[in-house]
Amino acid sequence: MPSPFDPIEIRLKRLPHGEGLPVPAYATAHAAGMDVVSAEELTLQPGGRHAVATGFAMAIPEGYEVQVRPRSGLALKHGISLPNTPGTIDADYRGELRIILINLGDQPFAIARGDRIAQLVVAPVQIASFREVDGLDETARGEGGFGSTGVAS
Ligand SMILES: O=c1ccn([C@H]2C[C@H](O)[C@@H](COP(=O)(O)OP(=O)(O)OP(=O)(O)O)O2)c(=O)[nH]1
Image 1 (cartoon, helix red, strand yellow):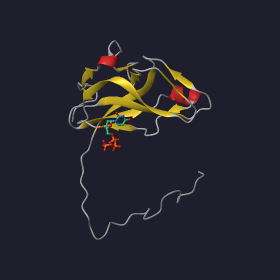
Image 2: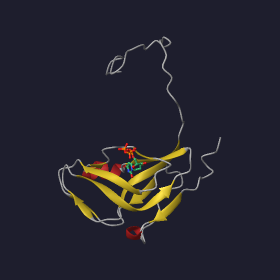
Image 3: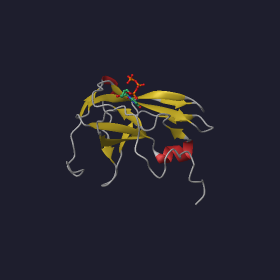
């Protein structure tokens, strides 16, 4: 089992409109997410969404995925989120990474080229397959769900 302290290498290909932008990187020693910046300038109107260019493509090693997540500061202060969070970047995807942003706030939100708009979390992927069966083993929960244990403690 590889240790999380042995970083894996992800090859990154800079696209012409991404020239000069920083490579995603951890902001602090034990950060889980690497901040990623916008390669374009735009204004998101309230309720608006846009697949924001990052100016690079990458080759994630087999057995891993990259998850795209919102930044809490932008979410809290401006209502900027990702409608598909966590976005899934597949190991075999070679197109440009795009960050789908949505403005859930009530004010237009301006993004400059180079602004940090989201964070990337690298995670191992467990492959599985489904097998159809006639019955399932019994559990204490059974078919209970969706609040079956109550909503208050
Ligand atoms: O926020 C995102 C989500 C996805 N992608 C890219 C990488 C991913 O590998 C690919 C496909 O994503 P997903 O499987 O979520 O999209 P889909 O709507 O199921 O499309 P597809 O049929 O192309 O798989 O799009 C992004 O750049 N940003």
